[in-house]
Length: 168
Image 1 (tube, rainbow, N blue to C red):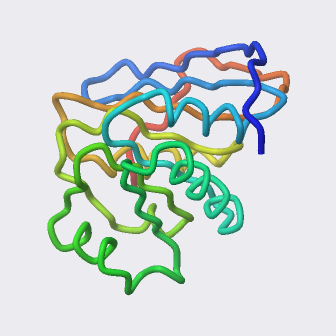
Image 2: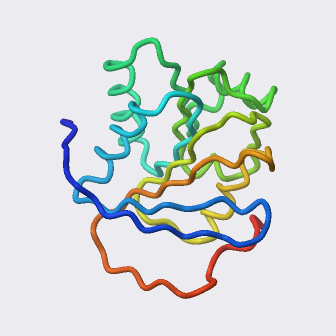
Image 3: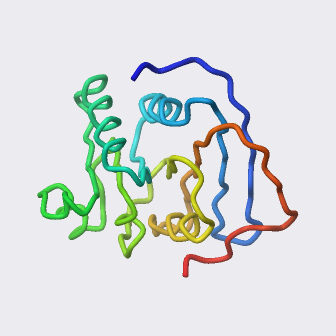
């Protein structure tokens, strides 16, 4: 798929207590393409929740085509025996400049001890419980990554002081 230069609206949700990462919502007509473009533009370790294996494959192939030097680890029920995924699970760390793409399996008990994960990315709206669970995958409390959710244009109703309190 082609990347586009479409303008998008950004809405910020911020938790107010310690260890509360900020969630940025990017509302665009092309959320997957926008997410893919921003993955390519941002160096470092990124963890992305895309609950669709076909779309994960599409994004993984695009990253490999445009940045072959960049490591991509896919976390799905079909890849759970692959060596890169097993190494990440054993060490609770991901290699430098790596993009992790995962389905719902990534929400279930996976922790990363890395203190340099730059982004947690979500494709399409997901329920608040998933956001809370996903926000606690990186276990570094001093340096929380930027959380970004990519969605199609929609009217959002923002409730004052509303945020997911904890992961469980």
